[in-house]
Amino acid sequence: VEDGTKGARAFDLASLSSLGTFKTGCVTTLHFLCLTMRSTDDNFVKEFRKSLEHVHEASREKVPMLESAITSFKAEVEFAKRGKALLGECPEALGRLEEKLAKLDVEQADLQKNFAQAVKEVTDVQKFFSISEKAANNLPPPEVFFGHIAGFIDALSTAWFEIEKNPARWKAYGPPRSRGRKSVPAVKLDEGSGAGGSGEAEEEAVRRRATTIGAVSEVRMAQEEPAPGQTG
Image 1 (cartoon, rainbow, N blue to C red):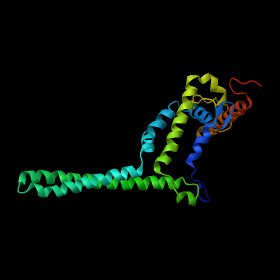
Image 2 (image 1 turned 30 degrees about the vertical axis):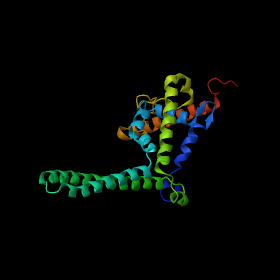
Image 3 (image 1 turned 90 degrees about the vertical axis):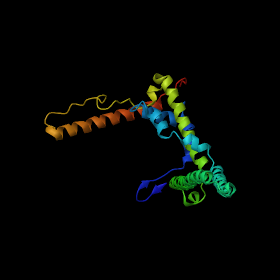
Image 4 (image 1 turned 90 degrees about the horizontal axis):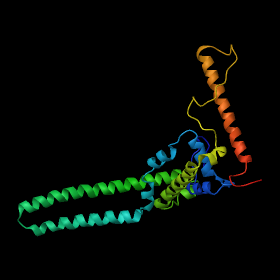
């Protein structure tokens, strides 16, 4: 979705599944994404999965069932309250019951509050990722929304582990690996190009340009080479 003032704002999460089917040879867009992230961060997938560790569970939860469970809990609390009349004139038992009922009231109120907040937040997120006003007014169930994300996490992890098993096989299809400034090839500037801070800044700019040019060259070579196991 393009925003005239803020640029790209959102995209349809259902389109994430296409990253695993669009390919050149055996290299899918997911593989190239993994190769790109691996070039700078070997732990990317591990940290990515950790940051979204509850998504799979959320994709299995259904809002109507959660709402029904909360309603049933509320009914049980009300039933317990009506049972106070059966205790008659037993102050000790009545006191214990009232103490427990007070806790149940708090728990029931918290459940309703948290449920309402969760529904609001997932609705807001879904609307943010909606690609049109029509889509924003016709949102899928939250479990479907989370299912798109969970499916992407699984597909990305599968591609990542395929590369980890045989990194040499995939090396030619991704950008050069980087480990910060130490891995950037040095480019010597002509004398007199600057002194002090300005000279260092210019040297850093040249290094960045050299790295960018190298990355572009690697990508072009990968596109021109046959996929592993293919000839011609």
